[in-house]
Image 1 (cartoon, rainbow, N blue to C red):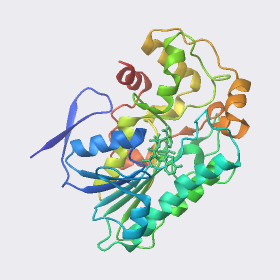
Image 2: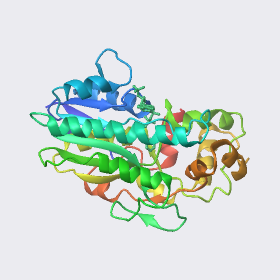
Image 3: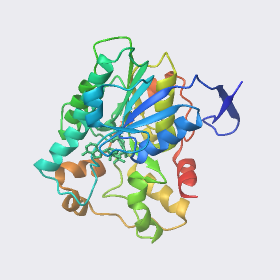
Length: 317
Ligand SMILES: NC(=O)c1ccc[n+]([C@@H]2O[C@H](COP(=O)([O-])OP(=O)(O)OC[C@H]3O[C@@H](n4cnc5c(N)ncnc54)[C@H](OP(=O)(O)O)[C@@H]3O)[C@@H](O)[C@H]2O)c1
C-alpha cells in the first residue's frame, strides 16, 4: 500500500499513514501563500486540484464562472481567499475594510451556495479563518469551545465569515480552521520580517509580552488536508502549534535571531506600528491570543512542527 510519511510531534520516529483515495479539490484563493503550499501538498498526496481565482488560467475557474456554472465536479472544497490585511501599502480606511470583508465573506458565500446546489454534493468543505475570533489577552487560554466573535472589527469579521460558510445539508462535512500567524518561507509574516532580522535590526514588537499564536504553513495545510480526508472531522479546529499557547512575541523575535544567528534586541515601538498600520489594524501585532489546538489534537492530527525553534530552523535553513 502507498504510504505517506509524517513526522511524529517529537520528530524522532517516522510515522506513516495510509494514503486516501484521490480526491478532486476546489480551492478558492489557492494562488496565495497558503494556497500554493496546500496545492503542492494535495498534489503530492495524489489529489487533483482546481483553483477559484479572480484571474483565469490553467486548472482554474473564475468566481464569475463559479456563480454562472455552479460547482465543477469535486469531492472537497476549501476557501483561502482574502485581501491581505497587513498590506502596509494600503491605508486603513473604510474602502480597505470593505475589501477585507467582501473578499472573505462574499467568496465564502459563493462557495457555500455552489456546494448547497451541487448534485452530488462534495464530501467536505473547509474554511480557513483566524484566531482573531478570540479576545486578545495575556492570560486567558482559548480552545475551540471558548466564546468570542463580538468585540472588535476582526472578531466580528470572523463571525460573519464563518456564518457565510454554513450550508443547510449534512451531506457535506463542514470544518472551520481558525489559523494563527502562518510561518513559511514563501510569504506571510516571515517574508515581511526577514530583512530587518537578517540585518540585525529585528526585535520584539512593543513590550514583546503579547502572545504570538503561530503555525508552520506545513501544519496549516496538513490540518486542511486532514480535514478533507478524515470522515470523522467536523466543526471548529484551532490552527496553531501546540506550543504556541506559551509563545510571546519576544520569544518569536529571539527564536528568529538565534535561527539567523543575529541579535534580535531592537524593539519596534508600538507607536510606529500604530502609525504604519492604524490603531484598529495594529491590534494584530500589538496584542495576541493564547490559543490551544484542543480539538485539532483530539482529531488525531499529528503536528510536524510543534515547537518554534524546529519550525524556524526548517523555514530559515
Ligand atoms: N497568512 C496568515 O498568517 C493567515 C493567518 C490567519 C488567517 N489567514 C487566512 O488564510 C487565508 C489564506 O491566507 P494567505 O496568506 O494565503 O492569503 P494571501 O496569499 O494574501 O491571499 C490569498 C488569495 O486571496 C485572493 N484575494 C486577494 N485579495 C482578494 C480580493 N480583494 N478579492 C477576492 N480574492 C482576493 C487571491 O487570489 P486570486 O488573486 O487568485 O483571486 C490570493 O491569492 C486568508 O483568508 C487569510 O485571511 C492567513
